[in-house]
Length: 401
Image 1: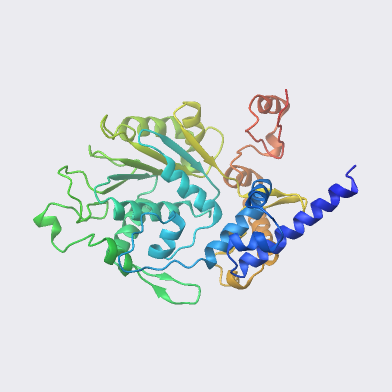
Image 2: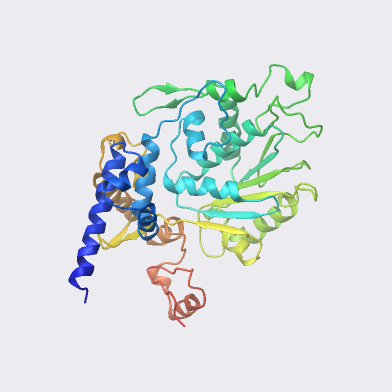
């Protein structure tokens, strides 16, 4: 039974967290907000973030929306966080889980492989496009290879980056203003010069291109993109991005996909410049390529984020990132919604999507745990005892000897 003093501390902490979130949503800086709610030291705020990750994510998202990032003459932008750099040059405010993706991208060293598994609609591909844009801007000699299952995804990836680098695309701001990429080109460009294909043999095509500022002697393009089923030529790369390389229709071909990755793409580095590899996607089912990579023991880092986290106050699983369920929907104006309003709206959208896709797809695609409750057996429960990080349906076994 919980004592009265413990209950009082619990309620006081909940009130402070709610008040701090409200202040940050109104534009109060985080450093001031935790003082305003009565925390005497930053350590108390940090402890609250660690104990309540869902609340921490909401604070991060609210702070990012209000933080002003501006260009200035002579300013150097290398020290900007990925979120602030993307806001300034790509007009996109990253949500908390997207910041985690970007941080993991930056932490991956040459020669390492990082696996990212996230739910559909988490915006993982958008973060990758922002990361590639920044990499080419700050290091025009960097070589990136991109692989996906669909030739359409490959074409969209290359086209989106090229349009940014030539200031031919626009992003609609919350107020309806159309924002371009002139600042990106002005600070870091030019990325493309008319006729560069003929004069300097720097290609600028639909599947590969080289930025104009590259001074490498090698013929390898800045970006080369392939569908996994296509013929890939023998160019080298510094970073390999494997994005949504498997779907439900190719689930039975995991062994073939793995062999293609290992023999055609994972060997694109050199001893002097080891290949950095990012494998990004949504779990498809048992035996998919993501499970195979882990089983092969070649994954150095893993970022696995389910669509939900448990909210002890509501007594149920709630969206990890409420904003990600509402962005782009004209019915919702996130700038005018409180945290509770955003959460309640996201719960409705999320629950509707869960009913629509069904339990099997929900657990595989959204919870990154591709076994349904109906398939959870005693044998699988025992298997879960041996690996406390695995989740099977609604069954979670932690610390069972």
